[in-house]
Image (cartoon, rainbow, N blue to C red; front, side, top):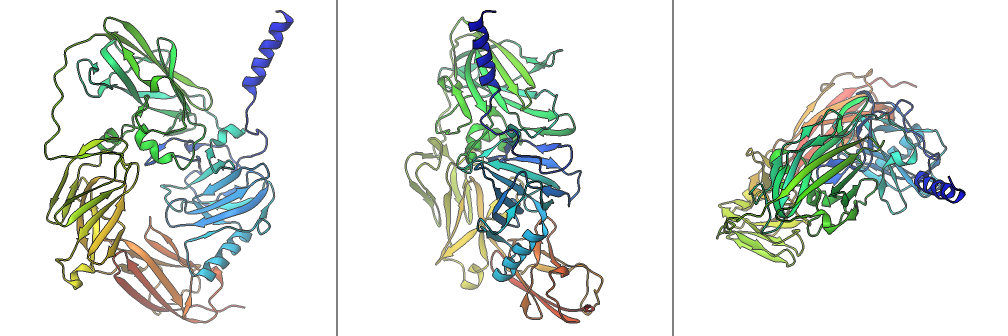
Length: 564
């Protein structure tokens, strides 16, 4: 090999091996072999997953270590979302995030509880000054848990850049064992123009996927014509976990030439909502499976598309043959391939059916209000991704706003005039969404005069609900008049089956006490180690309010020995 060629190949190898992300700065936040239940940017409800979910063997209370030295820049405690979450800024400009925590380390826990008592609020968001909570490398900063919107014990871990964009933590050298190829379950073909068809059909068509002995996939030859696109249902498996995780990279090719690349290494929170434009949203709402569309439709701004030739659309001409190839990789480089042979065949297509005459045509670029009787919907400009006809009907106090199969880009306002109700009845009313199974769910409702309004990003059925009953309150580990000297926690169940819990306030001997609320278990918990009890006889008062404003008061007396 000549010296010049050697230098060339060495330079290429060097460029390919380099990464813009530091490989030896961050360490694992758990001192165990990492096994993931969720991967970065995998598809979740209305968003891409912004971190990795690390399994904790179904347990809570594992020590969580800072991934690098830094300082605590943000702490958030919420009943939903990330639950208890910690944000640490580092010297290289990155931020590490630890979420769904059971509790913080002793210093941080004391800092947070002092602020909670000062603000008389369990839910709180804090932004400590740079010098308040400095953290050394390899220091325990918290303990893993199951708080917030977590569906099971685990640690959610993120790394964000200076622009607050989450980045795949695996890019920083954090290791997870994975030698398993991604799996391709289903393939769908889409006609994308008036003259296009797939096997003589003008609508989405499922194509049978055949797995080969080498682990790759193929389909039988399909007949098509015009501009078409494809979509897949696929996920990744890791060696030590059965979870169906997201993939890291998807590429599609037509006759060997790349047409689209989707790289899941980084995104911004501003764009994550556009996941609903990336997937086949109607299929997801009906089948609860996410088809990833390998073509880009109008008003899809996702930065995940790192290459796009003709927006991934493929033009099939009459009497021509071609092959579409789809390549799917996980982060560790395991890859699967799918080959789709296509024969071009132009055929005469029947005319498209007319739009139902009673449907309302939405002009996506214009603001509009649609009204019937005492119900109206305010639609800001660009709330929809494209012009679309929708079914808008009102029956008594029920609004049918199409089906929840069209994604919205912005929120819209649904309004009900309630002037026909008496003041007594009106105060208990709220707007609720009705599920496909007929269950009513409270939608956040505001009242101004005789108008109830809810803001939503979902089409579907909405109606007026009424709630005139206060929440239920049940002591769980004590009774009125009981001694509970050897209990560490005070536990109370609260629930409201109609409009849901809005807020609560607990006092002990007239002083506010911290009670942590877990909506998954409907439990309020007070930790006696907060150290605010200084008397044997203790009078507890708890007031819980639902989302309509009904309140229930609970009072009890209990006794505890006072020790020095």
